[in-house]
Image (cartoon, helix red, strand yellow):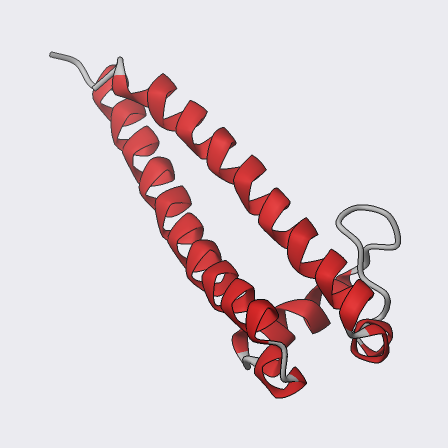
Amino acid sequence: MGALIPILFVALFVSAICGLALQWTFLSRLRGQHLPTWEALGRPTLFLNNSIMNSTAVLRFLWRRGYRTLGDEQLARLGNFLRCYLAAYLLFFMVVIVLFAIFLVSVKSPK
């Protein structure tokens, strides 16, 4: 299991980068095609002008599928994919943490 941990952390890192790219694409399309909605969400960006308030507003917008009301099929598909990706990433993150904890316990326990 010791060799698996670094591979999982690399996969977690790559998944995080892909998730950031997806979120950037979603926010860019929202800003470019649906400016009033983007402004109502607090003008969210990936890093700059990012606060707990507008991050929460964007997550709420995603989980409640608010993007479907905009009539933009491409944004709706991207939003659906992003929702699934975020849920899968969260699950993957938890699995990696649990496996890492199990690995630490097995290394520290006497044999």
